[in-house]
Image (cartoon, rainbow over all chains, first blue to last red; front, side, top):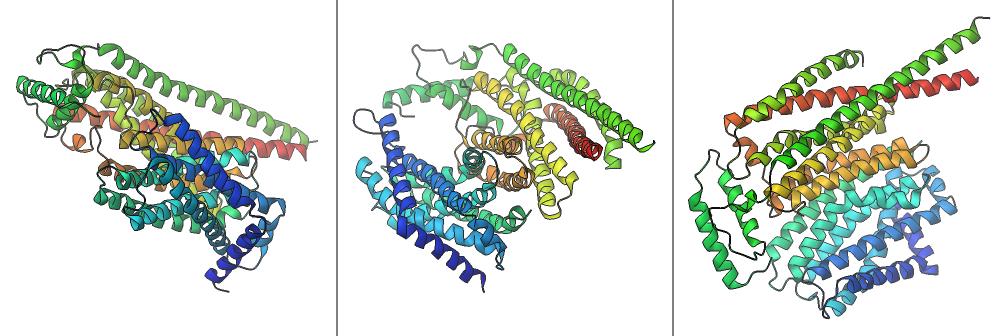
Length: 226
Length: 108
Length: 221
């Protein structure tokens, strides 16, 4: 079976499991909104947040809730030992990686589809101003974060202290993605929007994604085999 | 960094004064850094006027910073080297001990 | 490894001699006109920063070799490289703010290079944490982190140009006047020799520890 077909089957499996319980989607979304609220209360002064805050708040919420979703998605695999089964099955190992990544991306897309309008509502962020640019920034940023996150979450499944070690190893490496995402988004949201700058940050994100998705794809097999 | 228009005018005037007061050193990019540095220095709010001939950097004495920086580097490097040396000799000593015990087991 | 073992004491001695001479050379170098005396921190600060990148590459390449071939010496070298990134990183992150406080008036600035240097340092601290607390099999996991950490380096340089920054750009090094360039090169070479010596020694310590564990296991049989 081709790699993409296998990856889709794995992703579909995850999405079906999720569709039945909706556990991951609802908890991740709620956690994202809760993070937004916490940051809002931390930063609001005289009824408004500082100018650049909405972009930052949005991306922090994505990073935190994404980490939670990653942890939970692989915890599920660990509990039912299905990851082992997946790795033992006669499919190309990288297909497992792509499948899990795809499932997580679709989940995060769903979460962000709700989160972005909420941020727009709470902080008056102009999301309608350049919707495709904003979408591209969110998509490439989430992909970069998820690509590294999926690899690390998978490899930590059998490690000790896995819950705390995932953010410990993921966040420093994901920081360039967060920086580019926030700076690009705030360039779009700014009172005087700087689309050229946002496009530069988008290019950086695309570059980052190309490099790190490829790297994760290559390292998945050697890391997961013992 | 937001500044009131009159603050900006004062800052620019000070900047011009400072630029004229200093001779150009060798090295192409150093004036660039100086300009950026002075811009940064000027943007911190002032409670009083400082004459343009008196550079803000002269307020803090440099020697303690240089001394602490170099002292830290020496301590860190020598400390690490010393720690390494100690651990290495300890492990090699233990290796020798275990080797003799293994030999002792084998000989009878 | 034989060659490395024999080279190490030589590298160390040369480095020691160069370090002993360094203060005199640094003292003789002219003071920079605006920043004055405090700019002299540069002679140790920048070479130390270069060594953090050297460590990152050493760790990354050794990690890649370990991931694909599983030779234990590669793993030991990777660990040594990561530890040196942490060591030299601490030196950069302490001497930098000391310089900054005097030259810029603030201890820290969230500009591109400082931020990404801090991030790089944290990547390799996370590497060490993973090895320490990840339990058995964490060498392989850490190797993945090492590879990613190394690949992150070009993004460090990318960000310097993308962001407005008050940190002196890399042009400063190319445009150094000779009275400053020679002490700077001297210090860089000294740091390089020291780095190489420490890398070999630390890797050797790890290999010795692994041999000790095997010896204890053999004893129990």
